[in-house]
Image 1 (cartoon, rainbow, N blue to C red):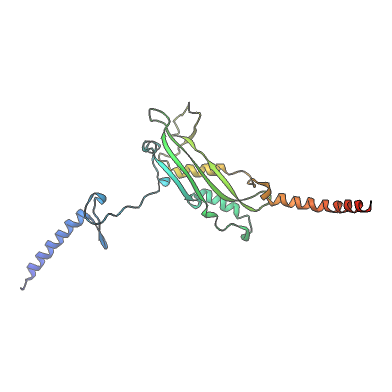
Image 2 (cartoon, helix red, strand yellow; image 1 turned 120 degrees about the vertical axis):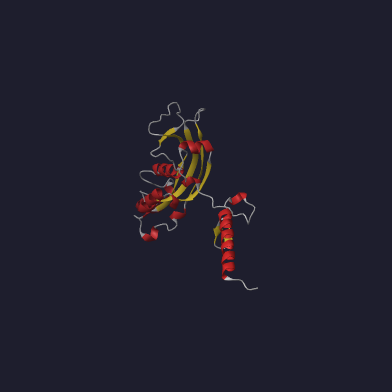
Length: 234
């Protein structure tokens, strides 16, 4: 059957209108169609959205506390840029061959919980714990070693004009901005946990002490040999 130009143009216009309505209802992406309502539509397969990282989210303190959010922390030290910069600067003092190559792989592990300190739900809190083993330079022997940092935050999240008297079990964390990002608080507390001069906890692992022992042994050995010879001559 032959179709005139007017007929073809009419059908094309009709198809275009149908497709436009379809796109408006479901949305269009190259290679697949996704429902606009996402997980409420029965059309097509279910595609889960990527989960965000709550540690990096910015919310008001009240929002965090109201949600009773629990955040599991398992982040590479490289995610804490300020802390990573300090560690990198410390290790830069070492010769290249002595510098740990995988120091960025250290993982911060822990958990954060949010809630309210008062029954009126007006004072937000953040509690929890976090730890990480960072590579550091011992100030005695000038060798790299792993330094464990541990924090147990018990914070009142208060604005600059707010007061939290009567909560001696908590420290006041003054919010500089309207929105609060948990990662920033964890990072700052880990930085504050860094010692002024890092040293080996176990003296037996510190080469400064082992060197002193070797020197002492060398100094006493001649006398020990002399004492032995004197005994033999008696």
